[in-house]
Length: 599
Image 1 (cartoon, rainbow, N blue to C red):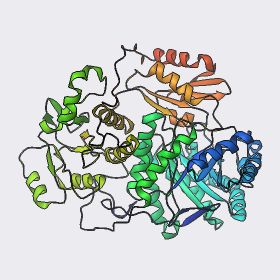
Image 2: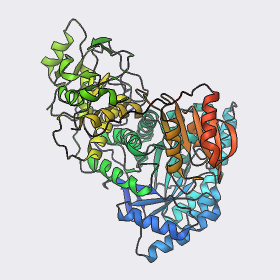
Image 3: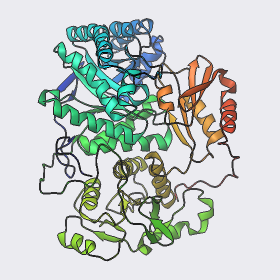
Image 4: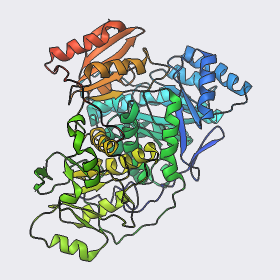
């Protein structure tokens, strides 16, 4: 399936061209236009604690954060934004502040008096989220929109009067019942939810806003942003609003960085995105180096123009379907079709690890690339493509090292030009790293953005990490990218939100406790949510959920249904394990094995 000519989110999927937008001013910081990709984060301190918020914001600024977001749960919390702003100015720090609003229009109106930007979530600003199932007639739907306009317009008018910017930020986990019942839990519903609020803003001639489409599932997030940008283009040239990128509930550690890089990097690869936040379940200062490294890959990248002679891509960017291919056998492994995506390694790395394969646990090398018979070609070569397509039998194919193209467009072109029957081996880089001192974050972000992007487009039947020199670390990275992209679930999958001022328990220590208790449950997905804002919605993708319900109290979920309420925090992890047992998803942990590390 190819991309519809009438629905496009970028002019050329084979060449980088940054999306042209208007500039939105957040205080003195410009987003979009000719500005670099901006980096931001969010405070974890209680908004009522002025001293803690000022200190944390200064710490963020010192490591390069350009915009600081603060939650404002109620009007009372929002009132203290005045003191936080004054405290920062008193210390000579004029970083723009963003008030994060959920559920409370009165909090937004108070916050807009003191900050440079207000983030509203269309799913819960004045809308209902009770998981109610009902049919809305067209008249009832319009009545709801009229009610929203009445409640939202005062904020628009205040922001317009004070020169305050706004982010209309849809979250996959908190779509309203009205949107859910008409559009379902879909990227289309996410986009329409945001556009309804944008139309109200535009009706007041207010344009100092931008959009976001966050989800914990990178595939959903990528499709939603693509669809949003395509819909904005259809609306007209003056709908050229900037885009804020983020994967919500990405988690912590290597997994959180990989998932963020897949979602954010996939869109930046195609020129979409003007400001980013990497959401990690860690202290907020740790988000900034990751975001800076991601942004740096694209902020100075020149536009490459458009080549209309190249073929349409082989996939639909707005609807994930794995690329179809024949199933072939390579070194005893079946590749292609609906078979599990395999992990390749080089002969050199295999030899380095061969004495300790039994110690590598799940991170096993499966195929040696030099023994695989893979055919490496330049996808721009008519001769090479023609010879491959004339072959009688399907063969494993990849892009040759040294090809003068970036990784993602090169594999897109390969998938478009070779017969679908040929399975594809993905690479993270077209150069084999020999540098043991290369920063691992650099390798991780590049590999995740490249291979993860292609997997989320349905391209790829095997993967090979070449940009990381360490054998064990390269294998771990390959498997974790497959997990984060939802392509091959080989371990427990966690959806963990970042800490913020709404959090009702210590997310970092609690997430670690849950990992220690459940990390051996392969294929089980557990959500760890600090509060109710996204909890129930994100539960829809999880098997079990651990959600802050009140200070010191935890609610446990099965799917998106709360089944245990107000459990004391000290008992909650054990009760979660009991719940998993009750639903026959528990197995005892195996004996520990040596982890695959830098070898």
